[in-house]
Length: 331
Image (cartoon, rainbow, N blue to C red; front, top):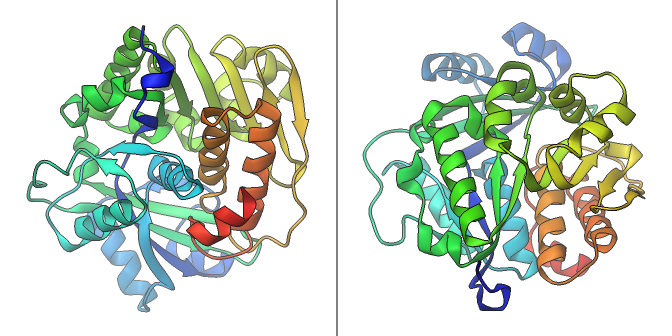
């Protein structure tokens, strides 16, 4: 077992490397494009190109994205120390992604080697006036993320491992998550995992359960994902079910706040009332602030309150990440 006081990193993240391209659209446009509203859909490169051609306009912004990457950037910009393992290609999109991580102060598995040739993944994010986000994602080379991208020394030197549920959508990604979980467990590193999206619980539930294994230290889910994983329509049953999967868990509920089980007590954390414009990245930001709080000695309630404040700030603007200045004002 490792000594927490000797840790170099607060959190070691494992997830996809995607560059987000955001578009503000109407529900009618989504319908015309044949895009399912409110979920993440995996598409091939040709389909993504078809959508961009039909839209025929530039994205409102293009930034580094990816669920776990957003979480680690939040942690780092709050003042935490993070490491991120991912797979990018040696193309301009990959350069954008790695430049963003470096600017956020994160260490990565690509600092000692050059990325291979290929295509870095892109996520088209469509934001409707109701602040909902619909995503069409071409994973590109990130679909090949595997245990090879793990850096055991960095993982062992971390307080927490954090993984995104999207990894389950590729066999090698699922293998990487399981390998990371096993290494973390063997080295006394706490394990945390986000279910990421309702579609993961709908189409990859068995794979998610494989990653969860005999149980994790901390699980993040929104209400729909929690219900999906536990195969129930009742929130009370999902709360009971998640206790079999993790020692602690967080269920985010948008404007209804969040529920946090700290291992003994179920806490209700109020949402911060705001006018939401774009919910893309809200769960990722909440998780990053929550993990920052826990690794800095906050109670679960204090960490969750920080998470709620950070998520509330994020949804009042376009984009999946807050600036360092915004986050510093919250901490």
